Length: 191
Image (cartoon, rainbow, N blue to C red; front, side, top):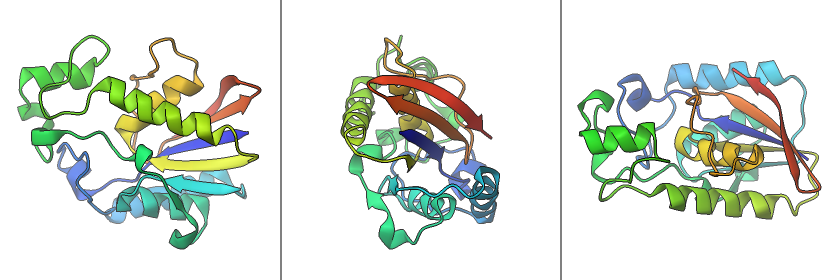
């Protein structure tokens, strides 16, 4: 099975460099153009299924890249972005040191109060992938967010700590992995 993991296109909050988290912000014009360009880059791939976070920016990205109607997308709450708690819609460069350290190196620093813990991100993302691997898909698209994409990638790279935190996924970046008989490999990264 090939698992195509896509981060959503740009939103107004991305452009303003604000922590977006679970704020349900739609794609802006640039984000829609990024999703269309990503679809062009992958060519005529037909996906057996398209999964998405319940947030609109991921659903629309999945619809465009997956070349499917929104109604065909399988929504899975485990793919939602990290909960940034009181840091939602705050400027990246105005965050307190605890949040900056956590979001830069969550494997070393604890989540501040009100912010979702790394172990929770890993738990729900790995649960999703273990379930997905039981399906009989040839190609499947997963439309999600930069935060959750990191433990999804970590699982598919067989990382012992469960994450691939760096480099930060770009808007509409697609990471393509192969999952076969419990083994995983990265095939390509489409920017």
